[in-house]
Amino acid sequence: MPIAPKLVILDRDGVINLDSDNYIKSLDEWVPYPQAIAAIGQLCRAGWTVTVATNQSGIARGYYDENTLAEMHERLHQLVAATGGAISAIAYCPHGPDDQCDCRKPKPGLLLEIQQRLGLESLHEAWLVGDSLRDLQAGNAVGCRVALVRTGKGLETEQRQQEEPLVSAPVFDDLAAFTTWLLATTE
Image 1: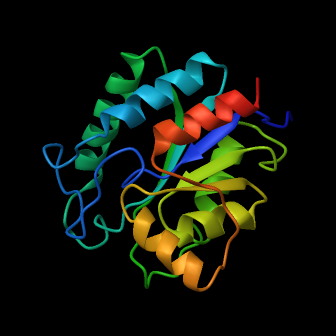
Image 2: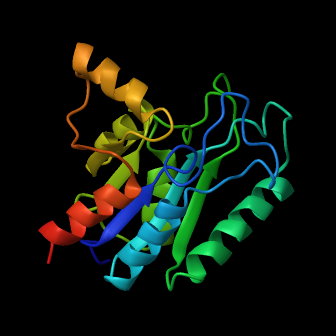
């Protein structure tokens, strides 16, 4: 099984699209960051595999169903395809915080699912980009390199990290800034 030296795993809400404390419950509420969609296309065109790992506890809470989530992800696929890119896998956790599952970040289950689906030996060379501490902790649990973006809950996470650093991660304004940095440092 190959190691994936060019794999980026993205959190969804707050990294790819606007986040909401009230949950993203419909396709109309799913509002992508245009610069994030462009960045995904840029990564793909540069030879990177892009995947998504996202907690979606709104399903367990009854705010939306898996069909609605599938509509959002279909729209994501369409937008990224229009930039010449592709999302190779989307792993999501439909469980609530008290469900004791193995997939809800900060647990590593979603990342292990991506590893298995892509047939990879390791995620040690992969990057995980998130806006919350739980994203970074999940990445650390499987040996990913991790990066924090300031979009979504990222500014709040950055402030908490400055007060009590729990995970070491470079910080970027958004996914586009991370992409620019990554492509400049890996050419």
